[in-house]
Image (cartoon, rainbow, N blue to C red; front, side):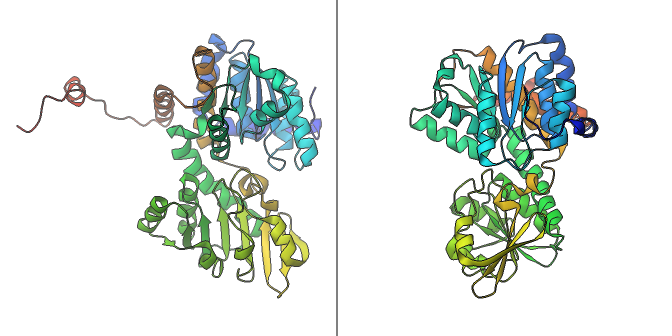
Length: 418
């Protein structure tokens, strides 16, 4: 069983999946290796992820490893319908995902994925794990563990663990160095601006661009916006991140001050109402609002609706709100992930490493079955190192190695100044 938009899109989707695979050498290598080893043979996995070409290749790698896989969407606007069709038609992987599905259908699809009775989950925002703990508790006893791809999801899962509510171990794939150093910084940096530019076709050069949140995603967005010639402002609540942003050459100020002068404001915080009513009340005419955090709560959309007297859609992914004083505020992609709703998400080359972490973390969970506490765990350093080495080899990049003498020196304390 599946629930997708149009099976006839499969051929187009397959071509795009193969195009993405050409930029995913680590996943290609894992497919070949794991098809012989079958380390996940018979393991039922339900995955709530963005249904993109890159995710399709993760699914193919998991299937090659022997997994019994079902997919559902992790965001109502991120599904690529042709990819969903190709996975169903060519890989025989059940998919429950339709682009622009309603919230009700979104949660129906999550329930359908849970009907698979998984013993392992893969999540992008923790909705699958959350629903299992709230509505499908009969599944918990059989669970081996799960993985989480996003900052937002890791935050939710840590909260569950603190409350002693988490009933099985989770590997925080998001926190692997080969994920957040590259996927969050370079992937979000490129794809978020790609979404904004596709949605608006407004030149960034000479504009004032405010980044709300200077974590790894915010760093990447600020870097790319600066490269486009924008005057970049950073709004932060963490003093260390704010200090870093200042020393990286950006203006740092409260968002209320930035809102008065910004042409673009992008949220990447993982928190609720980062852009709120008081900010909207002082925004300059024509300000463009976008979000690259996982959930559509970072911009207070009900507040925006309450402040406006009219709303129109001048472009496909742009909702233009007219304020009582005549100012216009433009919201992109309904406040959802702009890089996936208005563009195609992260480039394949960075998702190659992120999804390699997913595959190897799933195998690690199986190897450690019954040994891990019901908490959020980091990706083992050996997996991070293995993925980095595989990626370097695929890029034909060679590095030095420590000599025996150097290794001994670093592991001892006896030697000092001579």
